[in-house]
Length: 157
Image (cartoon, rainbow, N blue to C red; front, side, top):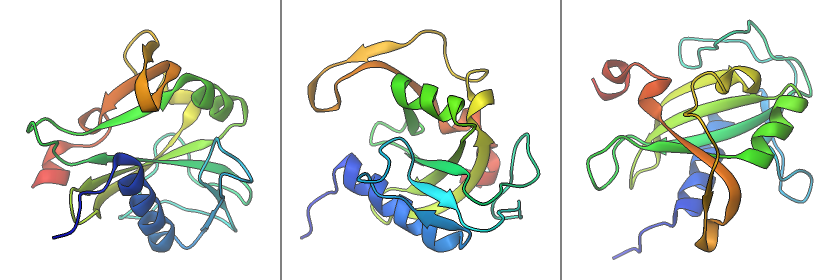
């Protein structure tokens, strides 16, 4: 019996699948930049599998942060994206983008993806930055259910 993946391991698996499914993305390791996961290598255009919000194309060199959320948590609630204040502010300053993915737990199969400029995410995030302690300690964070970005009927059927 295999052990369950940690949230970080699952996130890295989704990141790898997204980069494999989107050939115009090039992986960026933490040793290069901790504030984003990929850069556009060439042009990245929207498609049926990868819709864009607020922009028609991403050009070479554009930083992209990949965020993953489970379709459903063990509790039955929809999964959430976790935003760190310091990272989000850097993404906004650098005119970067988020690539949001919703995945099926355990299989880590990507069900839906969406590209959104970091500059417009504040409009959908809940008010106020909160603190968290423990292994994911951060001075400011916010969470956002994937259903705030995706049509649930398109993801869940």
